[in-house]
Image (tube, rainbow, N blue to C red):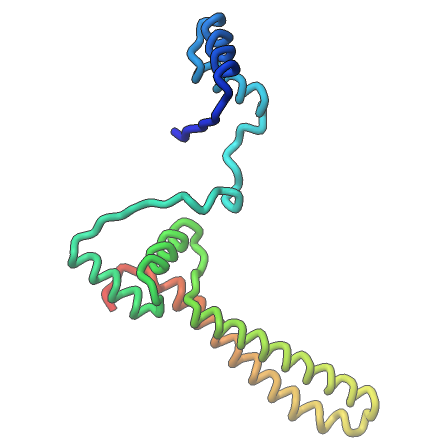
Length: 173
């Protein structure tokens, strides 16, 4: 259970103690009751994004387990074993991919490539609209090239996602 503390002037502390005792409660019980009245229905656990970063857990491993974790995390592209452990927990809890910094950079590069393909598509559309006769010849070759680029892009992104999701498998690699 979490603890809430505050400092009070001596006279307020004495008045609060007297107030709680006069109602047959300890100071802690009175403070809990006051908090419940003030919060009402809002006394919910905050969504995950609002939970403080200080929520930490310490884990202890044998020396062999620690070195196995370190080896596995490096093999999976993580520079810190703690990041690998956090990724493992998040992947198990959310069933969503977690990426290394290298994989994130690959996805960023992929997005840049998609933006370039989009610009090329706009240029092709503009050229087709300007000259219908040239459009047919240009259209086939350039659209085939763009389709190949998109297929390659989808393959790379799928590979990254599969790599991330399968990273946590228990099979020995």
